[in-house]
Image (cartoon, rainbow, N blue to C red; front, top):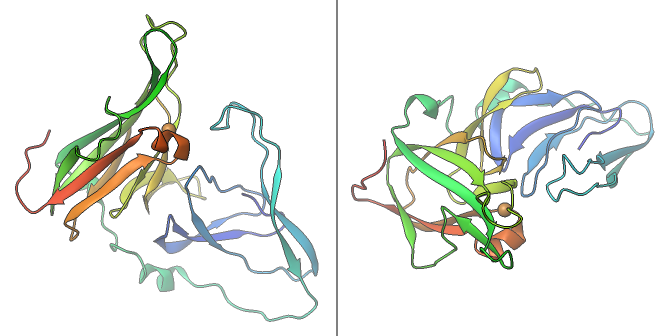
Length: 251
Ligand SMILES: [Cu+2]
């Protein structure tokens, strides 16, 4: 999502404040996969006129649906003759809004939670199925999580074994979890790694992506699912249950 002629000053991802202002230079796109959100501030330039904010064209290789996607206009930014020279917020001002200060959960995680998204087909090559950890959504099956725990979540996507006729390769899915956001390392606008809080992440197999999360105060059930919504509707979803009692988990 680039804007011609205007920097994008990003202040939040998936509704979580970054705790700073990350400035993506004019023309640099911000990656928005299915379900992603990015809050940006745009300071109007001094030159009146119409400016386009676009969804860039994507080749089939870069498209989640594996089809060529044309450029789409998202919005027109119209700058008038009137002026009102406002300041952008500073990093210091935004730091006060960071949800968990400068917490780095990578150093605290003890437990491991695994998520393998699978889009497969039955042995006859007829019917597709959509699973999380080799199980379609079952409202009566919940993964237990321990209140106060800090876990690494290992995310991946798997395909069919080669012996299946026309096996489906590992396809990209979008991990989305409710209630507790997770910490993930991305490449920031300066090209350096940085930690951000998100609740939605593209997962491309077969590599495993690790993210980190904590269960601080909410007790009860919520869900994770693929944010490609027809995948979710067809079974790619799981119930989670945060409990205030010890849970045995993998280390
Ligand atoms: Cu999916």
